[in-house]
Length: 301
Image 1: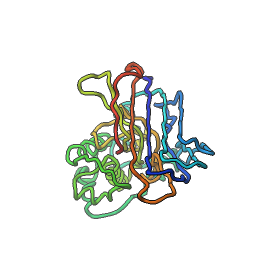
Image 2: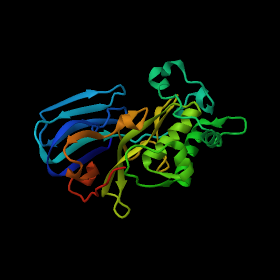
Image 3: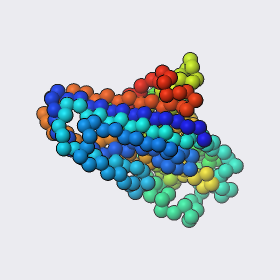
């Protein structure tokens, strides 16, 4: 497996020292079949009075920090090394019964798949848009359906940076024909669940290759989709880039809804005017690029 190093730093700046409430972090990548964490380090300044680790109901790593000190700057710096194996989505890997849509989920898929099938919303416009990817008789080639949906979103929707909290309603994304990576992921999830295909939200990191130098990479926090396909299991689809498979994607958290996969959230105590800025920098560095190569910083989603 290729080895990647991911560095993610988030810094909050305040006008004067403030007190901090509990902070919840989802920064450590998942241990899945195609990615394994080799080393993980988390530095927090000021040092928390207590730091605890757990796993949520989706087997994501969650850290909880509590603080006793006041400060005018709060910084979280996570550094991770992991084995990452790119995986393709091949028609031959799909179970025979599932190669043509619609298909019934096999009983052995279990509740861990069923809980990602409940539709997010129902709306005539979304119904019509989703049905447009099917033949007149309501059938489709399963692999072709998933690929076409991913690429259509990439080709017909504008991918924009949107720094507001939360996600757009899928109907609003349809009307605007634009959205952030998380908005486009939510739209694709809504369409897949309406079609009866299990789909979940993925939060993590995107490895960005430099156009002029393939050895120099940057990174960004990112959001995409996993759909469950009998045979290969959970397959990655990135509608904001139109790509299929986990190439250049590092999974941190999977969830039913985006609010369950927020990388960092917490509270602070002070006047609203005390908050000055939040800065986020991400680097994703392949082992052969070297830690000292010029990687670019990325901002938010």
